[in-house]
Amino acid sequence: MTGVLVLVSPQLVHAAREIAVLTGLGTGLIGVTLFAFVTSLPEVITMITAARLGAFDMTVGDLLGSNVFNMLALAITDIFYLQGRLLNDVDENFALAGFIVLFLINLALIGNLARLEQRLWFIEVDVLLIILTFIGGLLLLFEHGVGL
Image 1 (cartoon, one colour):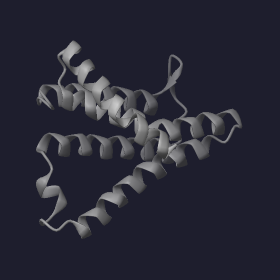
Image 2 (tube, one colour):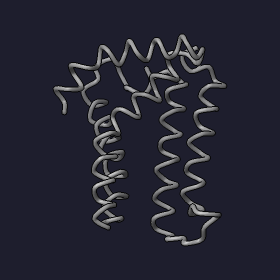
Image 3 (cartoon, rainbow, N blue to C red):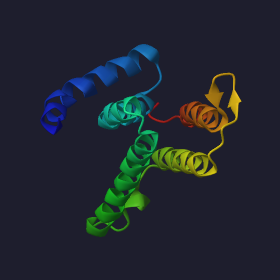
């Protein structure tokens, strides 16, 4: 899978740039969205397989575990970053994107621990809150001019 990503990454960057130009949304916003989507594909496949097997806790564990591992990778990278602190050199808009991700992870953890079974129409309340927060986060990033 890693080899495939290495081979198709230049095409993905070109496609992302074209999408940004066509939609007028900016390369940063499209980049953040597509990067999140592409890097989550292995977890999505694992989650679909686990859900088909009825292992719903495994789906949540896979999703949250992957995100926590990525945060650990940033912490380790900060140790080896020679120009000071890594997060000092991160653009504030991308720090905002990171905060939104942390907030979404916490919503998922709270929803998993609370085990709310209340539904609105066909969707559980905590899942609806996560979806609305994700969409609101994208709008907030767009309003802050990420990549415009």
